[in-house]
Image (cartoon, rainbow, N blue to C red; front, top):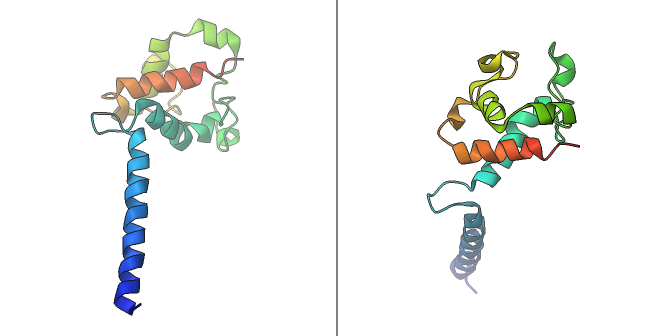
Length: 130
């Protein structure tokens, strides 16, 4: 086999692998071309929330010890029963100060146009009730 033929075979194999990976990842996309709201919410949870709230929502994330105002533990049944989904959604999108809480809870204004993602984040928070 010539070098050109070998290179073409490698390129073809790599192209097929890339196409398969692309098709496999399309299951995470909805018909609107964006990421599935549940998948996007989980990614946002890991990328933005875990730092303070911890992966289990106990308020024990890696930066929580340095915060003057400790993050809420979402596992607290008293808190879970006292707060509405709407209030949680407001805090997610507009930040803590929007409802009289700490400014350490930053707003996520980019989610204002993604109510399905916000709902999925609320479900993640609700799922941490003990």
